[in-house]
Amino acid sequence: MTKAVLGIIGGSGLYDLPGLQNVREERIESPWGLPSAALRIGDIDGLPIVFMSRHDKGHRLSPSDINYRANIDVMKRAGVTDLISLSACGSFKEELPPGTFVLVDQFVDRTFGRASSFFGTGCVAHVSMAHPVSPRLRMRIAEAADAEGISAVRDGTYVCMEGPQFSTLAESLTYKNLGYSVIGMTNLPEAKLAREAELCYATVAMVTDYDCWHPDHDAVTVQDIIRVLMANADKAAKLVARLAKDFPREHEPCPIGSDRALDTAIITAPEARDPELLKKLDAVAGRVLNG
Ligand SMILES: CSC[C@H]1O[C@H](OP(=O)(O)O)[C@H](O)[C@@H]1O
Ligand SMILES: Nc1ncnc2[nH]cnc12
Image 1 (tube, rainbow, N blue to C red):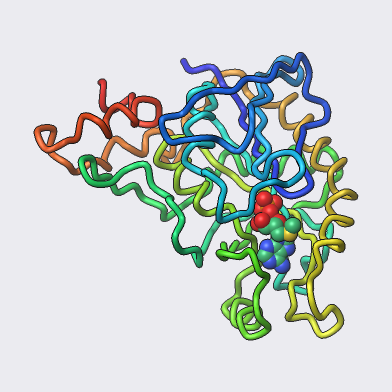
Image 2 (image 1 turned 180 degrees about the horizontal axis):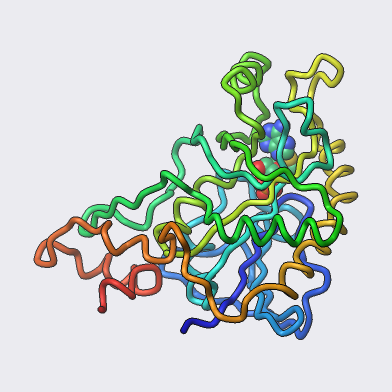
């Protein structure tokens, strides 16, 4: 049996996790470079929790400059089994107004130039991303939201753009017409890397704005986004507190195999593997590489 450890990555406006108890700060080294911030390790109701601020205090890091590989690697090294992203996003649907929490179940990648795999020359792996979100974790978040009276929409598609500029009107209308639900700049590299690291991953996408497609809202501003996020921060903390209270203390096997994703993914023959890369993969792929 594996002990459940909940990882929380806080996005824009969420640079700490109120309610986290017995906190100690730890800087874990990663062979993938510097993570965004020190980990804040503690517990809520006895459930071990590891928090990281994605953009670091003071929002120092832009979405394109975040070292997603180091962030996921240190979460894995800290023993995290289940990882939740708390993120700000724009909405493409009238019925998802600012303040809504969307438990997305799909992603579309519009990023470029991001390092979003641990694997490559010397150890090639292809994990499935058909179902990028772990359904059981998403369901647990939905139940916690219900228990706290927080309205959370059960599914949706998050398009991940490169940024840092917001979308043009033509892009915004295109995404809306394609039926996407929300937009952000961070979650897909994270979801891909979490899958490679065999972590269950789920996103709580907190709507802060209508992007620029909405006839009554015109352009997005950072000030508007932060204002909504501040109002949502309490709700997010309550959601995590309830989730932690009800979360099983043993890690539940993922019904879609997120936690065993590498069982069938590595294609490079053992004799063709690069020992240097294998060393860097010790945390994320140790389970399959070292037997
Ligand atoms: C501050 S608005 C744009 C910024 O907000 C979102 O951040 P996160 O996903 O970390 O909550 C979005 O992805 C952009 O990085
Ligand atoms: N409209 C938007 N586009 C991209 N990322 C966002 N984060 C919050 N709102 C956003």
